[in-house]
Image (cartoon, rainbow, N blue to C red; front, side, top):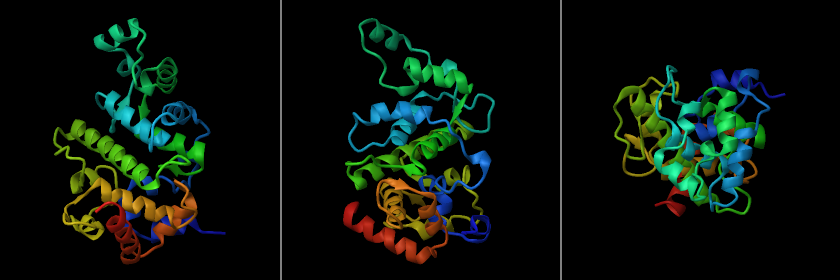
Length: 256
């Protein structure tokens, strides 16, 4: 039996530490788990009509559009008042056009009401419950385009949360050290980002670099658009140089 607890505390891989699309698949403790798939069930309806975007990608995008603040929490979240229609949305609804946002549908508003407040971590927990892992691509979609769309959505959600908390973010679609440090357990200056560099910018992680690492993690197993716990574990126990080399080959072939 795999000793996941030992692995989590004694092994280290920088890509695992930094990229939520990988480390959120490593669900070890009961408090990390949920049986509630309602958010992803709702997001799946929209994702099925959207090319190369998984339910989690859709949920992250709509979360970022909807959230307005921390609401007294230490992290960004959506509360029921955030799901209320704007004036423009009310006018559009009068003419039969509903908002293109899962959290502003009747079902989405009910989910947020039941939660009280929906955090980004709730999206990941719901996705894991629905897929037994973190899904970045739907079956039949292009894995590389889907990975890139997921990376863009996750980075945007992180950047907006950091901007609301600190009133300071370059908001450029790339993760810098301060933004990463706001959610990841890192302390060693900017070296961790330099080690993950696949292009020409050693101080920030681009969406293309993120996507490359995501597909590389998927290649540790079935390469099916879902990062499973076993695949996340394989990344966790990989040495940085070997895993970065795998991601680099993907980056150069598909994103550079």
